[in-house]
Length: 166
Image (cartoon, rainbow, N blue to C red; front, top):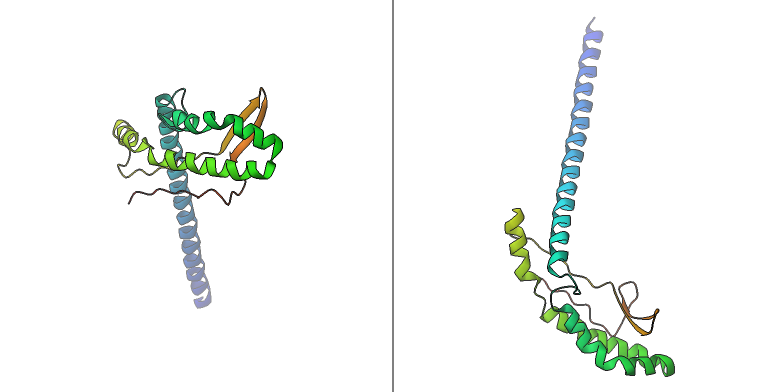
């Protein structure tokens, strides 16, 4: 009789422990799912709003003018180097991209737009962002694109720029 009561106690304690562990994982997974859903919703709202604000531009309002300021005057030189001096082209493209990126970072105006979005959608005021450029191509001929920068390739001549606000 004593062993059966002891067995029942052990089984009930183990059952309670297993139930507690299962509940913990269910609550944790629900929290993670809701957090990811909120993050996705927040990101989508910001993306939609931001896309509307920079319609017909690149990266941010005025970004297209900055990129064009460097690319357009150097287009013929880039084409000549691409066709006749590939090694010099690689060096020149990195110098050019580095200058473009420095100017883009210096003139980034997204800091003024984020508080507006945060207020409109009741987001956290301490919202952080990352503005990235994944690909920069030029076309010397129609439908013949030459990559000046791709985030998938290493460029030793381009400084990796990270701007953080603390």
